[in-house]
Image (cartoon, rainbow, N blue to C red; front, top):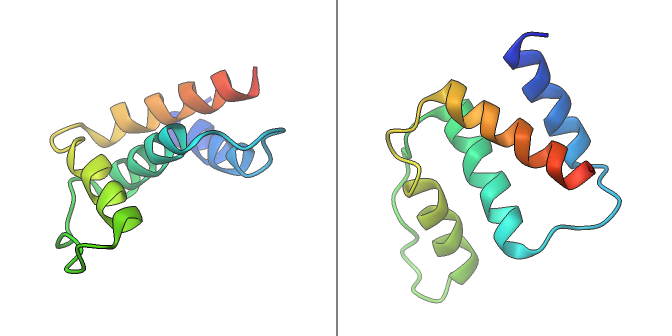
Length: 85
C-alpha cells in the first residue's frame, strides 16, 4: 500500500481512537500532520503571549523543521498504529 494511502487511513483512524490521547501525543499528531501536508512551518508565532495552545502547536511544528514529508507521514502512520494497538 502506498504511503499516501496509509497516511490518509491513519488520519481517518486518528479521529476514531477508543480513548483520547494525552496532550503531548496530540501535539505530536498535529505537528507530524502539518509537516507531512505542508512541510516546514510557514506561519508566524502567536502574537498573544497568553495563547499557550497556539504557542505549543507552533513550537511542536517548528521542532520538525527540515523533516521530509514522507518521513513525517511514516511517523504519523506509526504513531496512530501504536495508539490503535
